[in-house]
Image 1 (cartoon, rainbow, N blue to C red):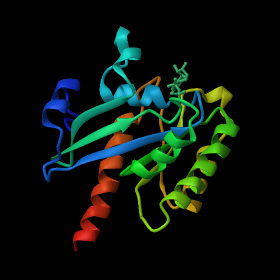
Image 2 (cartoon, helix red, strand yellow):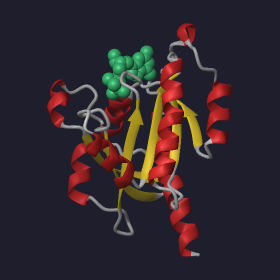
Image 3 (spheres, helix red, strand yellow):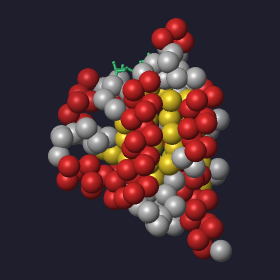
Length: 192
Ligand code: GDP
């Protein structure tokens, strides 16, 4: 498929806007070690760069989804420091959220539920797009959370669900395309 913009970092900063002029802020949430940075770097197309550490932890890029361009800024700042202020700010600033857990870590799965509740509290009246992500699906033998458990959790929390493997780049593209579709769905229904 051609929908994933082939050219990464430079396409972004220069354009910086959707076809309707918007730039969507997507925030990654989740426990330490679940794969947030790995997913964000794949999105940003910088996962192999030696200086990725210094590249900062926001990644902006335009991608083509269903024939239309969308500009996303992905924020991997949830764990940047322990400040309550930053975490509160994260809960307020996003246009969409990706809540990540590791399928090899039950505790991270439970934490994902807590984050969903926290987010609901922070954004009570808003219907914000959220995707629950079970990452590390390649680690079959150390799996602690089944696909069914993940899916059931997403039903309870009224959000979308996908399993990914950042290691194998499996479903990562679908994840970010999915976020764009979720944002558009809500925007379209508001405009109607
Ligand atoms: P973060 O703390 O949530 O940002 O997690 P990182 O992206 O830093 O990943 C933590 C560790 O898990 C690193 O050693 C990654 O290489 C590894 N990791 C991340 N995603 C995957 C995955 O899909 N599969 C496997 N096997 N390892 C992964």
